[in-house]
Image (cartoon, rainbow, N blue to C red):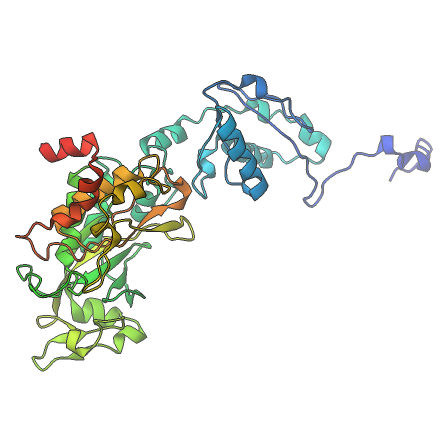
Length: 447
């Protein structure tokens, strides 16, 4: 307030021309749109920007993140129509991946710099030249993405397992020579166990092992000695799972160059200190001392979880396989597919592929086997299963975010190596009936 003879008329103090709105306690905003090129940023504007259609050519790729307004149904259907009727390609984005969107990196930098010198009004905000001073090139981030072959880049303080998850790409779980694989194997084999619980579902017991730093592994216990084979009169679907089959299958998958199986290692446990003392209530109730004074447990599952099928230490030492966890489904959901060459799982009835001579022709007419890589992937899988003797491949999974043009995960190999001296040729039915195989797979086999 001004006092004295020179004070202006009070009515003039409240006119619009004499007032500048100020932000005192936060609040106020400006909705802007921006663009950038290879070396500099364009101007910020309040309204719609000029169309970029004139820049589109045959190699144009539409890049947008998973913002809800970009991914709602109407927008997705329109973009799918555009992709079918033109040369525009729509880039597939993994979830929670704003670090792959270069404009988001600029918005973050802009926000950070504006907060360093907070404006007192929207007019002052527009006068700042922060946007024009930004450099759009983020070579460090680009190098990380290239190293991950299109996968995620690691966040600050990410655990080894999180870093491994972020390197998963559309065509493999991990790049060739990835140092994180050996780090994961080392951690699962040596880190102290903090908590043990039973994994729900399945016909046989599996445990979830929690380590420090959010590392988790799936534990399958040793049921019987390695040299013990499947009994001649037992069906493939009645045999115990073998922990050593999980370990060997991972290394074989790696040697074949598929890289579609999660890292698995072996470990010798003290059942008292590393299982019994770390188990939760329900699992803990199933521990007991056998007549031979060995510590045993059986858990709860569909078939082989009772006292007669208990897992026992010697007296409390137990070997098992430890498989690293896949990304949680709430982060990266997976789709479950019924395997076309699934067995009947019946003592007398045969599957369709066992009686239909032209079965492969029928499969070729069904998506996703009518185009793309998927049928070749199943040929790889049949070769892989044949080498480990696995007849128990009833389903397989893929990551939803990559659509159909991606690899099937190689999971659950506990029923391999039951008959190591017998070649079960029926496992190769996909290859024999379709008469096709990737050249790279053939070359690897011939080495």
